[in-house]
Image (cartoon, rainbow, N blue to C red; front, side, top):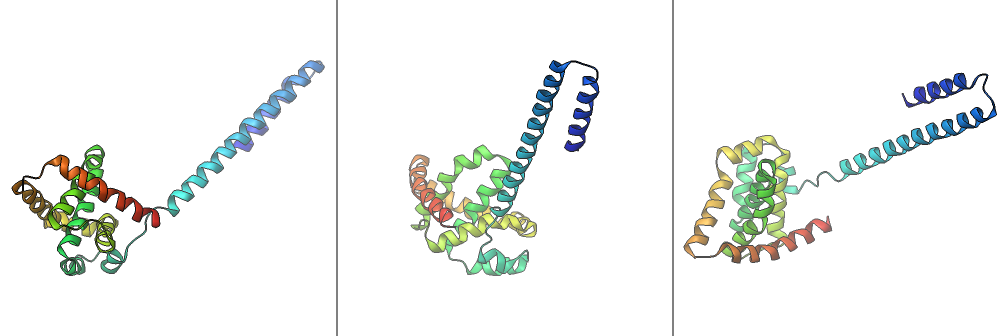
Length: 197
């Protein structure tokens, strides 16, 4: 399409230049150069955009072993989820809850990251480590399988775990500010794990 515009532009310049003096030829050469420059800039922009899109596609997802193992099979998921330790189940659900919020209300999700991770560290006395990060990553990746998302929401699997942890924090009179501080430490650990990938 761009080549057609170049050809048409050059043809128009040639036709307008017929029978004119030398100064018009210089104008035509300058205009032709400008058209070619603009088109080559568009081609470069298109190449850059294509490269960016390819890079984005390359970085999209690192599916973890848990979600690979269960795939989209909801029965397998329920069975494997029960095998996770209590802290692992919580961190799976924390990541799932943040992912669900990110879809509905991204601002709320970013504000809740510290709180959710701090809540887990407070209730279970375990922060992000190799075992809990595996579960956290699986919670993020659960969104790759619509059936998993549906069963988690319908059965209120994560809703119940998050509510239990919240109730525990309320009973222990743990302030939101303290949970946020605890969570900041855990967020840094998550970032380190993500950078390793």
